[in-house]
Amino acid sequence: MSTPTLTPRVDVRRADERFSTQIGWLDSKHSFSFGHHYDHDNQHHGLLLVNNDDIVTPGFGFETHPHRDMEIVTWVMQGSLVHQDSTGHNGVIYPGLAQRMSAGTGILHSEKNDSWRLQGGDEHRDPVHFVQMWVVPDEGGITPGYEQLEIDDALLTGGLVPVASGMAKHHGAAAISIHNRYAALYAARLQPGQSVELPEAPFLHLFVPRGTVTLEGAGELRTGDAVRFTATGGQRITATEAAEVLVWEMHATAA
Image (cartoon, rainbow, N blue to C red; front, side):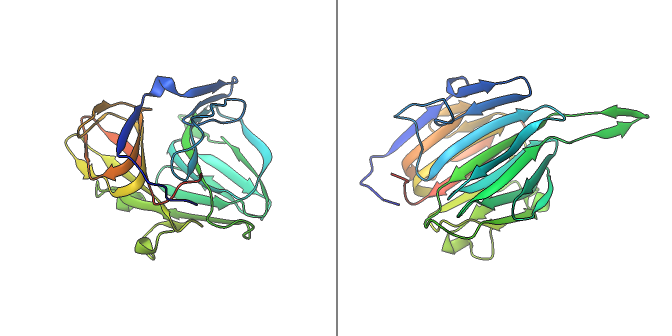
């Protein structure tokens, strides 16, 4: 963790500028270097190393694979995602459910779209759309862990709702905890005309996974757009159509 001397900056990243992985069952957009996609100048912002916007077709998903020393937060927009890991946790992640997996000393897990529903006697299968975000923990070698909590009711307020946090100011208030005392994730579901104010922090990351909003001083942001803030904050976001936003507040950087 480090907190260098910073110059105020608002860096808008458009949806079509992201790296893309298309492999039949997976449509994945990467905000940062990921897998074989590498850009030396685009490896992280603050403590956020991964912001993957994924759509997985029914019956497919990520087979069992390892992680280590990473805090992984998954936020589902549509459909349902089945999680299983080597610590014995398993469950279904759906919209409004906050989920965190701490890889720590090492964990194996899988994530699959097993969604299905019956309607009029016919089976219908739906894609699952989710955002997966990785932040580094503030210490390595912790015991692997898992946490999830339903926060759908809190999102009805239209304000920024703490989804996951390790910061002292959110003790007892955030939906789930993460092992980094310098980072917090918020979500908001906004109806047209509703607005929220961003926190102020050395590093902020705003992502719009659904809908259209306007950002004070920067203009319109559409689905898939993101903004990286450095040494600034306090701007207002206003929805021009039904939208959802994800905001990371970070008081340190990974490098």
